[in-house]
Amino acid sequence: MRAFVLLAILLVSITCFGAASSGHAASAATLPTEGGTWTSPTITILITPQLGEPWFKASYTFDVNHAISRWSESIIVYTDAYGSNYLRKLNFVTCISGVNESLCGSPDIQVQFIESFGSQSSGLGLTGVVTTNSGIFRAPTTTTLAAYDPTNSTQLTDNDMINIASHEFGHALGLNHATVSVTDDGTFELMFLSYGQAVGNPGNSLEAPSTLDMYALSYIYDWLASSSTLSGPGHLKTDLSLPSGTAYSSVYPYAEQIQALQNSVGQMRLEILIVAIVAGLLLALVLVFGILLSRRKPAPPAPYSWGPVPTAPNSLMIWTFRIARSFLLLR
Image (cartoon, rainbow, N blue to C red; front, side):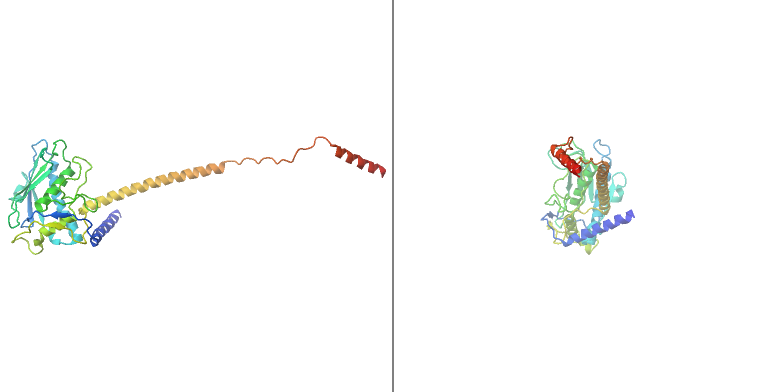
């Protein structure tokens, strides 16, 4: 029964997400492209962990892999709502140096880690792409991720690393920086220039590609709609905005949407429970007060005053008695 309820809620959310497409894009956000594309839908990524360094967390390797897989999951959600199903042909293959790197051969993208970019930089990640004159990416694209902030005092949490890696992977796919930091639904724009959350905060949330990011991706890889490989040139650098009828929002994977709904339902249940407890306490107080009032004895009524009772006969009474006595004697 619980699973059925969650499924129903999810279907409603998908319907609402799709219905939002009938509205107008309220934001004037734009997203330039890098002016390049990969020529194959299969893109290989080699992750090189720095296990021998004291500043490196082993979980960072998983974080980068998770960041890449979330792009695939967000593509599914976006294409369900807005079409461009050819984006599902994109296949991201990740390998780990020293584990299965042979599966990637000569990788398209190489991911490496450093301790910090230093105080002369405000960055947490850097991706360098090489593009030919015909708009084709030349391998390898190199992505560098920092374990600490530029002051080298605060280490990135796992959520921080996932967010930064997701942002840099967007560059490696051909996206530049969006012009706004927040989408119309109040979530962070993944491809904005700077990171919108405080580094190292354990409460930082995961960010997801926006509909603008996905729309730009569908433009860069529109050749997938008619071919499995690109034989001609790619698109040149282009500033893109959402078309009319597409809502500007973050595209979270379905699994994360379900988790958010479960958290929301749990919070709602807690609030309902608190309200029920408070209402019960108030009702109990009213009942106790009513019982106390019903048991209270009424005060006895004040005695009615009949006036003073004469203690001795007055002169009128004496004369009346004498007249009556004389009358009786005459008879």
